[in-house]
Amino acid sequence: MAQLDNMIHQPARLQIMSSLVALESGEQVDFVHLRKILKLTDGNLGAHLTKLEDAGYIKIEKTFVARKPRTFISPTGKGHDAFDEHIAALKQIIGDPKGG
Amino acid sequence: MDMTRQEARDSLDQIRAVVNQTRRKLAAGSTAPALIVWGAIWFIAYLGTYMSYLLGSPSYFVQLSDHINIGINMAGLCWLLLIPIGVAASWFIEVRRAPTKRQHNKRWGLCFLVLFVYAGVWLALLRPWNEYQMSAFLASVPMFAYILAGVWADRVLLWVGVVVTLLILFGFFLLHFQPLFWLWMAVLGGGTLAGTGLYIRLCWR
Image (cartoon, rainbow over all chains, first blue to last red; front, side, top):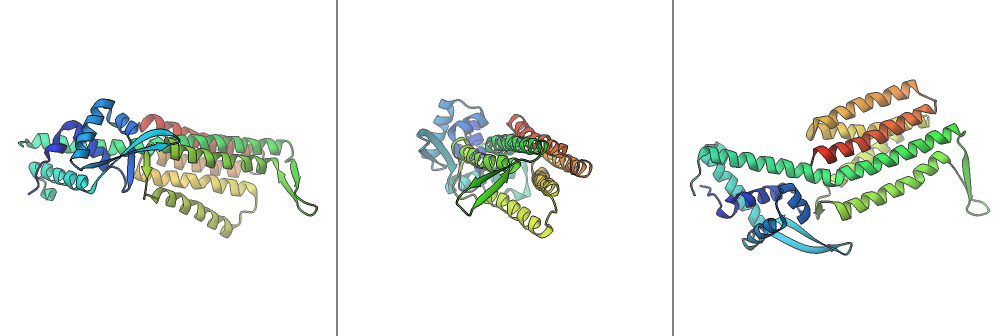
């Protein structure tokens, strides 16, 4: 029986994880673009990303592109699994037979 | 953690919306500027071709050695200069401005490569008898890609692909062997690429 994930359940983190699972395999999204997509503030997004990183759900990579610092974010395997289980739990609640 | 059915349904709807929104915005991030750049290049290059035909297609010769003398007309020179600019600009957009960093995903690159290779294969097999036929054919290739993209992503692209293909045919059959054909191709091809770039930039964001 799938369980709702407390870490992902929070609205802002649910949006972040939803956005990250939309990436192709091996793809990393730029912090600034993620902030624009989700319409969150720098501080708010940064704080939630730190929590997700601490939980092992995402990977944050700081790098330089043309001598300018850029931060790229991608979901980890653990993050994908946790998100899938959260979705399965939501589907169970609404009575979807594919809820796992 | 307790959750009602309605809350769970709302949560799933929200997830679906964010996933779709993310895919569109990321696609718009690097596709839109690249289309605008190639639209401008297409327009300038065909405008150069049009001017070249108006001026009687003057040719320029470059003496590389005593025995090697390369001749190129103004139209060819336009394309020769502009294509490397387009490639460099596309590289700049992808590396510096792209919203994502792709480590393993080469699917898009492969799609474009397949499209270009097949366009080359069809050109080699069908052997266009003149530059009008070749240009009309090459202009129809991105429209073919638009229709495919429209089937998967956005119906607007599908209809743009269909309408522009019909307009290419119209230009090909009605303006054949007339310099105006090149102006038609400049406005139609360049305008379509840049226009859809702007559309994606404004509507997919």
